[in-house]
Structure formats: C-alpha cells, structure tokens
Image (cartoon, rainbow, N blue to C red; front, side):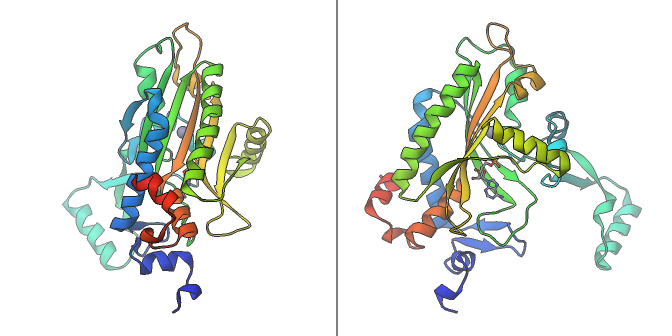
Length: 303
Ligand code: AMP
Ligand code: ZN
C-alpha cells in the first residue's frame, strides 16, 4: 500500500513509531516516538520550572476510595477503568482456567482491588495536598505526570485508552489560580509556536455522562471554566485538544478540605499537556522522519 493510501495511524505503525497490540487505543511506543515525548517533556519544564513547582510523578493507578470520593463515577462512568484480581481457592482457580479454555468470561471470578486506573493526572494530587494541612501563604504549585486510562477505544491515533498527561497545578486564592491559568495561556502559545504546529484556543467542556451531564457541560462552557488548545491532526474540520486549561473554582478545595494559610478554602486550576497528542501533532505536521523536521522545531526540541 502507498503511504498516501494509509491512514495516519497505519503510517505510524509502518515506521515503528507506535506498535500495535491488537486493541484499539492501546499501543507500545517505539524509541523515536519516546525520544520526542522526552524532549517535549523537557521543553514543558523549560517553560514551567521558573515557578518552583514541587515535582510528583504518579503510578498509573490510584487509591479507589479517593477516586470514589472525588466523584469520578458521577461524571464519567463510561471512561473509568478498575483493577481486579483473583483471590479465590484451588477450586475457583480450576473453574477460572476452564472458563478461559472454553472462551467464556473468566473475569467474574476476580474481585475489585483497592486500585483504579488514574483518569487524569491531578486526581491523586488533591488528597495528598489536603493531608498536609493548610497551604503556605503563597499556596502551592505542582508539576505532575501520570499515565491515564480512559475507556474510549478508537482507531483515531489521537484517542488512546492509555496515554500520559503532564500537568502543572496551582492551588491557592482565586486570583492566584486565575493568574496562573492566564500565564499558561501565554506560555502555551509560545511553546506551540516553537513546535511549528497550527493551533487555536477555544472554550471547551468535559464529556460528562448522560442527561444530567449535558447541563453540567453547558454550565462549564458558560462559565468558561475549561479551555483547550486545539491542533488539526486526524481531521482538519475537527481539531484535537492537545492541551487543556481548567479552573475548578473551589470544587476540589471544598471536597478535600484544602485550606489556604488564612483558613479560606483553596481554589485550584491545572494546565494539562497530552504528551502523545502533541507528539502526534509534530509527526502529522512535520512528517514521520524527525531528521527532516524544520530546523527551528529541531532546535526547540533537541537544542
Ligand atoms: P482532559 O482532562 O480531558 O482535558 O485531558 C487533558 C489532556 O489529555 C487533553 O488536552 C489531551 O491532550 C489529553 N487526552 C485526553 N484524552 C485523551 C485520549 N483519549 N488520548 C490521548 N490523549 C488524551
Ligand atoms: Zn488536572
């Protein structure tokens, strides 16, 4: 097949940038792809490290009790993934293997563990901050990253089930967190300009579930609580959200009882970078051969 006849995803597979696993949205990453991810990660740090953020890296799973308390199942039950494991006896083990051999569902013989897959990098952060007690006078700023899971299988390269999210999170007064978000609108524009990909910023909403979710989504839009930086990747007419900028007001502060130094409830905001999506945008716009990328882009990433 000629390269033009293949979808973007097939081209990525053919080059070994991504490697198929047999499940849509679940891919291994080749060395070249990972090198670009690492260099993009370092570029984000160059823009953000002047703020003195505390660095925290999360495993891909989080505490199920905290996930419950965060209310994720109210908003996004369709995206969640949970970790189950076998805790039975010899008889149940034999039954499990029989079911596998017969091609039947054997997973009912497992039980839920205390771990769920992390849906967004900042979910595990808030309870950690809350546990530490009142924030210092200038609030808190965090540099976090996690592999995230969302059950949205798709053949679009940009819609993965497991992907990495890097975030900066600001916790403090309403002014501190809205200033933070405004600063990142500007920084992100400069960052994407250095990467040489077309982009624009727009108001957005999260994919809240069901009929009640429609109301939540339109209220989020009306209040301009979420913005996305969009880049055309798979579809010119439907650009892909590569970065998102979220102002949660006092939602997480109230939920987790995060207090500012003066005793007021904290506000929070985060900027999230979809690591794979930005890297896919680079391959889409500059081609699958990194050696042939424009020198300004190579300079930004490889220095
Ligand atoms: P969100 O919490 O939905 O705003 O997601 C934060 C960022 O993660 C988005 O701006 C995307 O860049 C990235 N992202 C979200 N969902 C996916 C997905 N299914 N596959 C790859 N990246 C994603
Ligand atoms: Zn976040």
